[in-house]
Length: 553
Image (cartoon, rainbow, N blue to C red):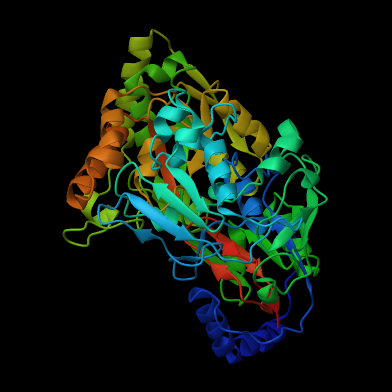
């Protein structure tokens, strides 16, 4: 049941919102410029009631690997840089953008002089060095280690061929870092904004040992808020303002209360009752709220894919079965009819909008073309051929999805189209908590899983997840060709950005042609947000909405 406020109330709020556009624009401008200007004191309520779409698997910034956890980690951590409202990296814990050597390999970064962890301990360059080394150290078991392979020697360290101390990062002093890259990286400033690289205090982390990141008392904050009340498994927790944060004067909430809400109907009911200031919405609620000031939609770089357990299911090792799965899905129908426009049809493995051809300025969709057609007769032909080659009359595959609205609806849609369009194929649905789905995928023992990927602004990360040694190569696809292309993108191409683009094109086509995954939609996320909430920042990259400096009118 949806509880709608009356039309007159909405019109009054709309007038208020329109009257305050100039104030909001000024707040966004100050944030985008690095928050160097003093802002006025905000006098609205000091508590925000927010949501998480599922359980958090870890609060360890060096081990985070799912979007649900990252959205929470980014509330209490901060890195060298952060992404502003224009999707540009701006200084955060760093005092300025890096000074880059002429060959594009060496970066020198100065830190702010007054930065500290939430226990009052000063943050130094050594904390960034320790955090980076900890990520690539095989003993840590970080499932995101390959995301920092742009550091010199990272790949060898991850493989156990060199010690972590050889990583291309060192402290020149307490307030100055030097980073050495594997090759010139046009996306490096954005890469360094990732919370994966948030500073970690070595003494604290080693004291906590295996408990680090698994409960609130076992993490330190480097950002605007301090995590409290999270025991590793509960569905509600809070953040309190960090008094040691360098920019605490521009943090306006004393508390952020978070609760897990998986179903849109529940979130809407809590929002309309005034118990939440924000709620995730999808499906029919997008139509219900489309013309209200409450609805905020954000295009993201998250790709939703049907991941294939190629190594763990013998049927999926058949290319014709995989081609049938690729061609039997109508991505436009999924995006528009099932998800109600909360996403756009994928055109390949790399999301549209992440980068453009340096030669002509064309986008991924324009330059690479749409490689993902729907062709039911062709899908049936491939499926019949697969049955013949596998010497079976039918196939049953288990599809695991997260038990939230989007996961359930997408899973039901895939079950319907596959069983309808490919007679003889049966799909058993398993809607499970996000943590269970992650465990199955990371154990590399599943048939089908509804997964996704949100990379950095580096489009190569969407290719790299399918590289042979990558921990998120859930289907354990083995390909010397992809390895060669990744090596070219990360090292061989250097500053030849035209060649880099061609290698991206080649890798994107290879993954689709071999159906290493089944791309579905490029996600958009929609929220109901209290129109009185101002000062939040919308991102294409990372967490869609940054609430760390938000405030109520």
